[in-house]
Amino acid sequence: MKRRLRDLPPALAMLVPSMALLGVWTVYPLVKAIRTGHLDCNLTATKCRDVGWDRYVDVFTSRQFQDALMVSVKLALMTVPAGLLLGLGLAMLADKHLRGIGFFRTAFASTVATSVAVASLVWFVLLQPEIGVLSDLFSGWIPALKNPGLLRDPDTALPAIAVSSVWAGLGFTFIVISAGLQSVPKELYESALVDGAGSWRRFTNVTLPMVSPSLMFITVVLTTRALQTYGEVALLTQGGPNPERPTTTIPYLIYGEESLIRNNLGLKSAAAVLLFLICLVFALLQFRMFDKRVQYSR
Amino acid sequence: MGRYVLLVVVSVIVLFPIWAVLMQALKNGRDSLDHPRSLLPVDLTFETIREAWTQGNLGRLLANSLFVSVAVTIGVVITSLLAAYAFAFLDFPGKGLVFAAFLATMLVPAEVTVVINRRTAESLGWVSSYQGLIVPSLASTFGVFLVRQMFLQLPKELREAASLDGVGHLRYLWEVAAPLSRPTLGALGLFTFLGTWNAYLWPSQVINDDDHKTVQIGLASLRNADINHLNLVTGGLVIAALPIFVILVVFQRQLVRGLTAGAVKG
Image (tube, rainbow over all chains, first blue to last red; front, side, top):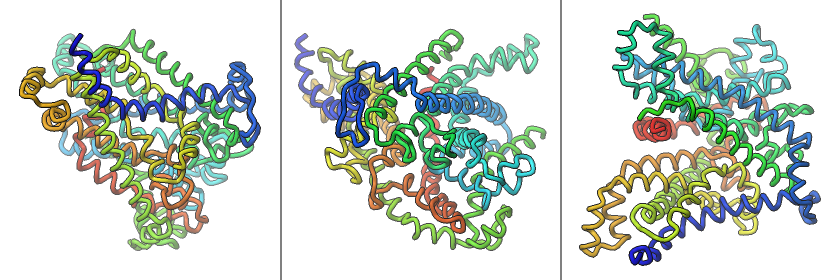
């Protein structure tokens, strides 16, 4: 007991920098957003009135929020399974001791060096019908590449954003799953072989259970990333093409320059709080779902 | 043999976007319009890259990004060391609760807090300033957690021996605990640097002028050039991506260790 009290002053002094910063820039904005979300404001946010918790129901059921939620969920459904499968495929392909395998591993991991802005602008250039290489190479297959261009066609704009973000995330998923594969004890494969398991059985009964912690980690990260997609939209489509706005994700609805609620602080706060709750629910759901099936490698 | 063919094909597909942008950047403006299809430079030239450098004001953008990222990295390492020390080596009432509160802040994504943080920056007069870019990122729960884990693995006897010799907390932290945790601090530093360098949302909301833009948000201005100059974007991309490629090649091992720490331990 004496020691605990003696340690208190130095402990406080050491914790104060982090606590103050997190308090001002993480806790306060969350609490404040929850309170501001109650407010119904005029355009310049000079006059607000408190309309209470019902405000959240109104915002959640509003057309704009529902549309943005659908876009975010669609984006997650496009990017998470694709990212997971491609990452697993690349990792299994490169998981062999071959001459020159280091070169291929580096190639597969390379997109980890691209930021959201760099990856988005790479695809922005590639997808321009005028100078983009893709439109010249593949417009026979996908006519929208040339006219009007994937990013300008309301049906293909969101899939194009998905392609960009799956590609950008590939390096990360590859590195994490590769490490998972390398930690599988070789004896497990040997004993499976002795038991006469074919390659598919070895995959489903040894590989999959052993890499499931990595796969779970990736699923959580990719889902969260999809729900938080902002930069790709800001750089590739600005939420458009108009008037359908098929790429306005929830973060773009809150922060985008072309967003319809750009100047409404109350609405933006409410939407941000709802986004927080959605991310939280997804994270908890995924942990619960996987908890039952995941084999921990320890 | 079959696997090699597959490896080559897949590598070509993964690297294709990078290759195409690089080749476009190595053409001059005319060739990029006349021969957009050619995946080799018609006449190899640095004209486009040089023009992107001046037009996009990339020297300034890179300097801003470097300054902000280095400042945030140093700050995060210091605040994380201090807080981690309190959690790992000190015993005080309410410790468990405070630590749980720290961990809980990890659940709050930036996409939620930026609405109000932009307001806070306005009231502090920090919009379009370096403070606005740096200060909100100076504490990292992830960093505190990571360094605490490292500190907990240091032998307890070391701490006891030091306090018997009259070594104070700060001296023990700087002279014993921190040096022994160098690999962890390196990984934390690398990730903080990359995260700050790559950040998009917060800089895009807090910076309105050209003088304080980071590379990530500044590159977009090249995109707004007319269609005849879109190749400038490719030049800008090459310049912006190069430093990170170099850093990642140098620090490959730390990167992989850091990325997989969360996954493999389950």
